[in-house]
Structure formats: structure tokens, C-alpha cells
Image 1 (cartoon, rainbow, N blue to C red):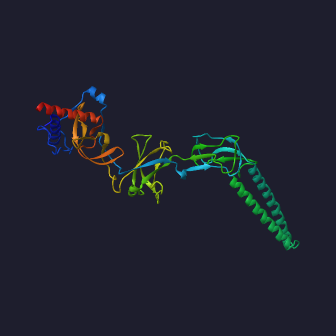
Image 2: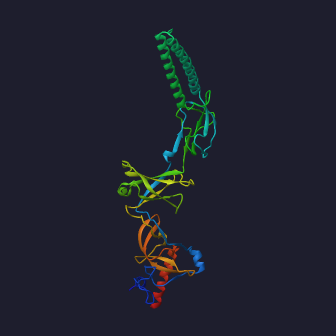
Image 3: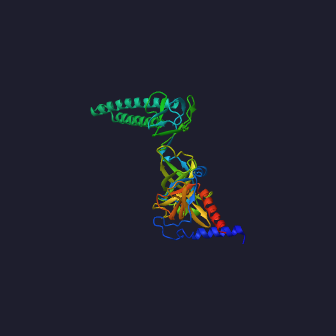
Length: 385
């Protein structure tokens, strides 16, 4: 038999059965119900530095996984406003800059408008006409009461007053729509409709703008939407209230916990995807609209209870079995331990058997330890023959 193949066969046999002076692979080990391959792995202090070996404790977390979908952070439209003038005019002054925090009713820009000036003039004329018509109506009412005035003159005065009041109401409504009920002349101040951040500014001093032009966009970024697109074959996992974990390309290793708050009723006919939404608090502004990432959803009934998890980078495979390296407390000494794995999500994997909460497992440099383990087994096999 080829010597190399013979050595590999002996390594596999020793890993599966263990050496005579080590616990057998299925022996009960108390707090650590998984089994140890025979032998410890020892690494010198210099070797630890060079190989970048790093450990993390086994943690108990709520693991959400099963379906991963592409996603994007978006503005919450219920907390976003496009600020536009309802009348054409010229920008006289701009009071805010891009990125400024503003309060509701805070002045954003001052604008001069001929149409607004005309509307205010019409308002003044309509108010004066009402006063004249009311005075005439009161006079005709008194004359009628004294038997001097005619019924016809009284009715004409009443009709004139009602017509003037109608004109005043129309002028008042026009001015309200123009946003010029406060102030005088042709100048008006355009204000923010809500608390938020100025995320777009198109207004420039001296610029002539038409009604409906977008001057500013103000958005409250303290709560944002993360919109994902679920492919047709994964639609079963898209349900309102499903636990979800959001991860972003801009922040590797960081996640945000939430739940699905909206599921579209129809698939996009072109992409064959279904839109879902997760709403997240964003107090520090980290979740910037436009960032891309993923939403991880769990199948129904999965991932609700916390489980023991370790980073996927800690897991190594040897001859078809999975193991991790557990720090022993002695510097540079690690115990290889067989583990039974469960669900996988966002770079973390459930450990159902083999380690206990708080155990320090190697999460960086585990491949180096695996190589040392295999080299040690090969040396033992070579020495035996």
C-alpha cells in the first residue's frame, strides 16, 4: 500500500477512535457533551502572534436565518417632505444649508412673488368690499325696520353682502394655498413642515422658480425603512411579524434586529420578486438611505429561542467531521473538540453539542491549529512504523 495513503488512513482512524490514553469519541464529558479528538495542540507565543489566533466566547443568541434577500435602506415616506412653492417667484434668501437639522415651521427660504402680491391685493380689496356691503346692508335693514326703505333695496343689499363675503372667502383660500396668509406685499417665507434633516436643497438666491418646483427635501431619519426583495421560491418566509436581521455592506459584522412590517401583495412581473419592509430606529444616523445590504429571515417557528452560537470561521472539518478548538486556560494550548452544528445565518452557526456557553473557541487562525493537529497525527503514525 502506498505509504502516504496508509498514513492518511491511520490519521482518520486515530481521529475517529482516539488513542488508548484518551477518552473514546462518544464518552460523556459532563459540561462538554461533544467529544475530543486525541491530543492537545500547543502553539508557542511567537506562533500565536504570527498566526493571528483569536478567541471568542460561545454565546447564547437568537439566531435568525434561513432566507437571505438583498435589501436597501430607504427614507421613511411618512417622515419625509418635499418642500415646494405653490406660486411662482424669485428666491430672495435661503436660510438653511444641506445637512442642517431643522424644526417644524422653521424658515427655509424667503421668496418674492408677483402673483402672491396680487393675491394679497385681491384679499384687501375683497375685505374692503365686504365692509362696504355690510354697512349698506345694515343701513337698508334699519330703513326697512322703520318702514322707510323698500323690500327690493333690502334684498339687493343682502345679495351684495353675500357676494362680497364669497369673494373674500375665495381670496382668503387662494392666499392660504399660496402660503402667504402671513406677511405683506409680495414676500413670503417658506417653512419646514416637520422636524428633520435637509437632505436636498435646490433653492439658490436670485433664482426664479415656478410653482411646484422642488426647493428642499426634509426627512426625519430617526426611523428608516429597509426594503428587501424576496425571490419567488422564498416567498413562504415573507410574513408580517417574521424575525429579521439586517446587515449592511458598509458595516461588516454589524447587524440590526427587527421584524417584517410589510409584505407586498403582488410580485414584480419583471424581477419575480416580492417587496418586504423592515422598519428600524436610527438614533445615531448610521442607517443612511441608499446603503445596500441583506435581510435574513427565519422560517416560521425557527430562530425564536436563543441558542448557542459561534462564528462560522471557528468551524473546521477533518475527515468528514466538524470540530472547533477550545482554549484550555493554559497559554498556547488548545483542545480540539468535535461539535454538532445546527442552523446557519449571517456568518454564525448554532452549536447543538460539543461546547458550553462561555467556552473560548478559536475564531481566527483555526486553520493553523488544524494543520498542527494533522501534522502531529502524521508524526505519530510515522514514528509507529
